[in-house]
Structures are given as structure tokens and as C-alpha cells.
Amino acid sequence: MSGEARLLWDEKVTRYNFGPGHPMDPVRLSLTMALVEALGLDQRIAVSGASPADEATLVTVHRPEYVTAVQRASRQPEDADEKFGLGTADNWAFAGMHEASALIAGQSVAGAETVWHGQAAHAVNFAGGLHHAMPASASGFCVYNDAALAIARLLELGAERVAYVDLDVHHGDGVQSVFWSDPRVLTISVHEHPRTLFPHTGHPEETGAEQAPGSAVNIALPAGSSDEEWLRALHAVVPELLAEFRPQALVSQHGADTHFEDPLAHLTLSLDAQRLGAEAVHAWAHSYADGRWLALGGGGYAVVDVVPRIWSHLVGIAAHAPVAPETLVPEEWQQRVYALTRGIGPQRMTDGRSPRWSEWGAGYDPADRVDQAILATRRAVFPHHGLLA
Image 1 (cartoon, rainbow, N blue to C red):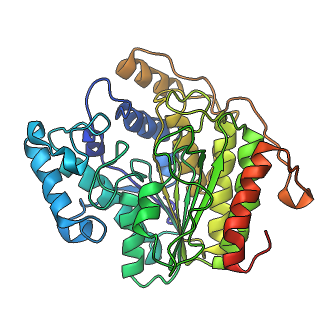
Image 2: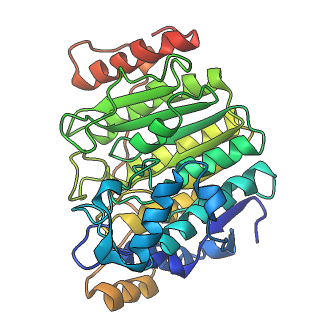
């Protein structure tokens, strides 16, 4: 058993279940853990549970009246208060909502504690990454913002600089909102342009409050952006900022909904580009954050074909036991897929692509839509960090 990484897992996280027909199907979590086990990754990483976040922890980010409203809706879903974003079209109320949400939050907080105290260099909670939840409301399938709660715990423990990198197709608006005025936290979100996707925020001009200029970074990519374009944007912005900011810990969100099969968004990434993104974040954690890395899940609604594979890759990367892309998906996992969904899963741990991208330093095309997006972000943010756009 490796002491270098920890995987937070408890089957009870699958109780975070909005019900039949909702896109956030918890089968994606069960199938991910089943694939982790089928690939033998659970033998390469320490797997353990964590206690649910208590109220004292939750109110470091969320307002007490909101936590009370979630608890009330958890007991009586029919009485959910839409004023708090509960019982809405996106955030259906369900029995046990508070308990399941607090468990996911507790796992991310425990992961933050683990990496800060040096009990493991890396920690993974693929049930987490619920980045849309606001201090006083649920939003975008997210009840408690475990990513923000984990960052808040790192600050409580003494971290002076924490970086957050969000690779979900949707803007990480909740985390940005929580730390908008805090110069200790650098939030970076790479997402589909708000013109075409929820939550319709995350423009490059959103750069943080007056007392924290340049603390919010938004790379808004046009719908249809490809593997090569997404990877070019990621590498054109993130490493320079991390090198200048010098975080003492790195928290990342790995929503799987950038994939071309995802039904709720419009980027066209392959599993292979997503894996390269995770590998890059891992390398940046070692280069710029003393190896302290908390990796979270997030969105992802191709619940069989995409989510279990990319998050299993994420676990392997964190365990320093990466899964080769050409690896065949184990037959025992295929049987599990059929048992739970009556469907057939993918055959390999790859989509068969080998993305190659050009580095920003080699020059850019001012007429190219992705280069325009990159340049807009660099011009908006880099001067605040003393960097050339």
C-alpha cells in the first residue's frame, strides 16, 4: 500500500441522489470505484472514509440559515425552500440530502487535512467537486461546496496561498464567489464560454475584488473547442500563474463533462485530452505546490462511457501508478456495468487519440477564436501578477 496518496471513499456517497431522470446519476460513482478496484488501483493507494462535515465546518463557507434549510429539506423534501435553491428544476430535494452532501464535503476536507499534514502527498475525492454551490444557495446540482470548504480548511490550518484549478466544462462560479475578495486563494477556471453554457459567468474580465486583483482567472473557450485547443489554453495560462503565485497546496476539480459524449455541454474533448490535463495538474502540484494536491471530481453525465474511466485515470495518476491508455477494461467491470445499467461499457481506457498542441510561446494567431480567448485572459490577469501578457 502506497503512503503517497489517499483515496476518500464511502459507498454512502451514492446516497447523493436527486432521483430517477436527474442527470447527476450516482451510478457514475459506483462504477468509478468498481473500475478502480478492477484495475487494481485500490492496492496502489490508501482507501479510507471520512466523517461528514459538521455544522461548524459547513458554516466556514455556507451561511447558517442555508445549512438549516438543507437540513429541513433533508427531513421533509416536500417543504424545500426555493429561496435557497432547493426543490428547483436543477436541485431536486431528496430525503437524506444534508447527510449525503455533508459526507462528500467531509471527504474533501479530510483530503485537504491529509495533504497539509503530510500524511499523504496527494488525496482524491472523485465524489466531490460540487463547485456551483453558493454560500446561501444550492446551484447546478451542488448542495455544499466541498471544494471551497477544503480550501477554507487549508487556510485555517495555516496555508498562506492556495491555488484552485477547475477543469469542468462549467465555470467554477461557487468557488470563485467564496474567495473573490481573498488574495490568499487563486482560482483558475477553464470552461466553455458563458455565452453558451450555465452558469453564464466566467468571463475573462472577472479577475477578483479590488482587494484581491488577479485572484480570479477565467479561460472561456468557444463551444466546439477540441483536444488540442483546450490543452493549448490550459498550458498557455496556468503554469505561469502557478509559478508566480507559489501556492502551498493545489486543489483541482476534474469535471468529466468536457467530453464530446457529454449530453449537457459543447466542448469536444476526448478521454485522452482529459487524462493529459490531469497529468499536467499532477506535475504542477510537484513543481509549484510542494507536491500537496487534492484532486476532486465534478460534473460528468456520460455516466458509463466517460466518467468511470477518466476518474480511474485520475486515481492512477495520484497514486503514481498511471493506467496505460491502451489498457483493456477488465471483464469484471463490464459485468458490473451490465448489472447496474443493462448496458455495455467501453472496451479500452482510451478514445484512441494522441493530442498534440502548440505552445503559446511559439506564437499565436490573432484571428483564431481560441487564441483570442487565451489572449483575453492573459491580458486581463497577467499584469496583476507582474507577468507579460
